[in-house]
Image (cartoon, rainbow, N blue to C red):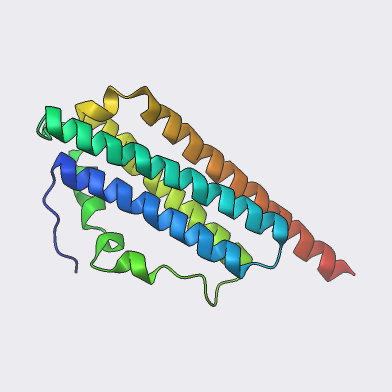
Length: 171
């Protein structure tokens, strides 16, 4: 069981930043592990986008906490979701250091990346409802839209890999 993380705007922003960092690291490790140059290039592009998201959240954390003090909407209907999410094992100690691509095939790598993108979208969407600084920032919606395109890109790569495997099996 993981240690419960106290919910504050700062803690929530730290989690989003960690997700973005973990995503960028994972994409870079995956790019180095795959043989397909097109997939490796795409994964490196996704890593670069995660770096940009991290910078935006870092800036938001600095400016928001300096001006607002980190208040949250404690009556939000999504509070329970965020509390559960923050207790999830992904945030346990050095869990981010444990992200690995070794031993995974390309389909497993792409599925793991897709799952992480879904988690990021879910958390940021919930925080947008709870933290005024998220709701007030139009770029948050743009980042969510970019994360959705990451899922689309990963889905296309998965489909391409499945089709290639099926074609190889036929020959």
